[in-house]
Image (tube, rainbow, N blue to C red; front, top):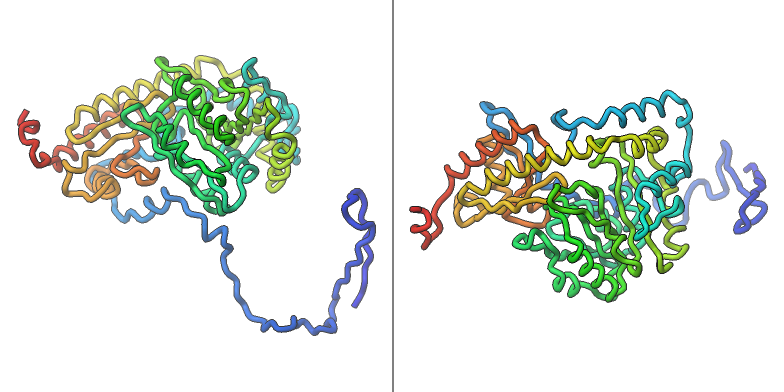
Length: 454
């Protein structure tokens, strides 16, 4: 056996000399055998992979139904605004990417938390007197999904729990359970435009609760919380001393009759990790550039949480450098008209869809206030042909070629979610087909014949 001595420099926690023995060519004295171990192949998936479960994929992939071949497929199920080509990003955004690429400056590795100049731009963009930000308060990530993952990983240990909205984005559960974190679901109230049931939420908090997840504006609900309601949420968090993970990827994507309030602007006492990114507001989800904004004016997170986020970011060495290079121009040069036009289109489609579905017996849509979604309740008593929302949406695909996500995907049965980013003509056609489908299967519930005769 040959022996090598390797000098280690620059780390006081390691010995200065590491004696490494490398077996080259020959057999060691143990002759390749470990005491008590019988060599055999036994490659198994990790516990983490076995615990990873995506409810949307589990439900949608198990739908064996095929669309009606006589009708063009209309997909109202995919939360990607680029799918139909009717919502392109602004030319300034694409030009910024071209310029960053042509510059040749962004082909190498960046710091794992992002270029300092890029983090300064994000801090400047979101800075306000109520919630000041500096570059040190910004971590750039590979999309908002990674931002959420890093926040959970830094705040929560296996065996602890987090509070998550129901209905809510399925990724929270997918990420948490893969890490051995328990998920507790607090209710949203459709009759109150999906406000949080605050009493129910607070009742779930115990000594193992490490984080409260608040999604505003909401996927899948399209709801936007009022300032007053956000203040009540913060009061619970402050009273119970629970930090907040604010999923604000749809921040500023609210319709003209509502106002978006960044959660951190309303509290100086509750530490908040706000997650956002380019995906939705700038209509480039595939570019995978997100961020974490650290709001900690009482120094409750302190250096430990900040240092923890830096360490965790080093696992994949940060997001795409070319997008980082384009970030300054994207944030500074995108015209206000682009944002306004996008929101105007979404509101028009939301109003159209809500009005059409509200007129259909057996359906109860909840009017959205922002984001890209609308939730629709199914009065299952009037549709005895179907056991639940999954069967309802399966048959809708099979007969009308209209894809909607059953809200069981979001832990909320007997609703379905509609994505409102499709072209207007497709939205009109989809609503017409949904009406035809419902009229075919609608039955008067027992004891309600008078209502049906009207």
